[in-house]
Length: 340
Ligand code: NAD
Ligand code: UFG
Image (tube, rainbow, N blue to C red; front, top):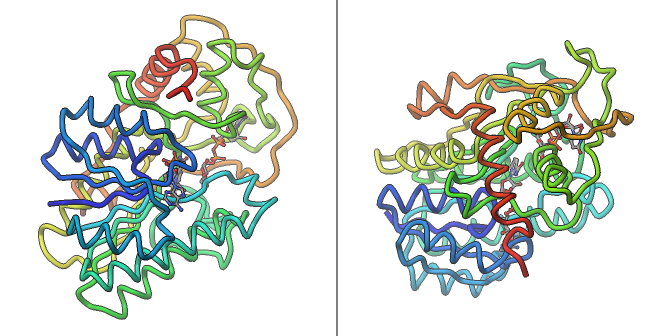
């Protein structure tokens, strides 16, 4: 099966492409490199030993996208492309609605015009908002808006794709709600390469280990959790990548209609537990300071993963220790990420 991967040069996209290529899928990457580097695509080619078609295009450019679909004739799409910085989305909401919602409209239109009926969409645990208590189940009632514009774009995308599935019985869509992706490919050749100061916990910690940051700022230790710091469901990015391969299998079996799955481990770890695991993996103390709470953070979020196990035959295998060791290997081997 040939799969067109939007945002395939990004963090999760590169890992997914390597996994898919390893399983015999053909991959076509469309990425405008707004948050990634050409070297990432080169590393996918290097790791897979396969030729991967790459188009540096904006997914919102319908004509360019149509040309790619007509030339490459993919049978399925995995849609990773989008912006993902929560804080930036609060400051510049329209940037997020334009890119994250607008390009999905363009993509769905072009898929319709070209007769491509299978899509996997990168959603997020953020769609659950703060209404339900964990473990979060896919059938939870979702809020009308998330706690930031970025999250709301995920809700809107889920709704648009759901409406397309309702409008066309032959349309197949798998919405994957990722929890907290961490880690890197065990080769140390691909990994997360955040621009500027990292917003997320794991990249901030690894940059502290290599001396690019002075110390970790722990955002609050007065939450109603055992050690007072927030709990999240961290999942190794390679496990996440395999979740996408499992989703594609649904298309190969025939019409699956609309499906929604959490991709997490089902286990929560606190910020202090993650820090401790990184200290062990690094073999050193990692300096930190307790700061105030960050706006919008939930005390606790972790997945109910039973549906993905039951229906996709997929479950996360890697441990928090694996995530730490692999993130550190990537950071140490590539202190400046993919470079300029
Ligand atoms: P990333 O920024 O590394 O990758 C996204 C890629 O999309 C980048 O390479 C970027 O250049 C590209 N892109 C953005 N807008 C584009 C456009 N208009 N046209 C073409 N390419 C475009 O992010 P990631 O961490 O790999 O995340 C991938 C997807 O997973 C995103 O949709 C994100 O919202 C979602 N997600 C990520 C996380 C996380 O913590 N990383 C959690 C939940 C969901
Ligand atoms: N944290 C710190 N210091 C930091 C960064 C984070 O203490 O420098 C804490 C946060 O307060 C939170 C935990 O570490 O308690 C995890 O924070 P992340 O930013 O790594 O992850 P979030 O759970 O906040 O956000 C992630 C993705 C979002 C997605 C959300 C869905 O980054 O894109 O999960 O739950 F929307």
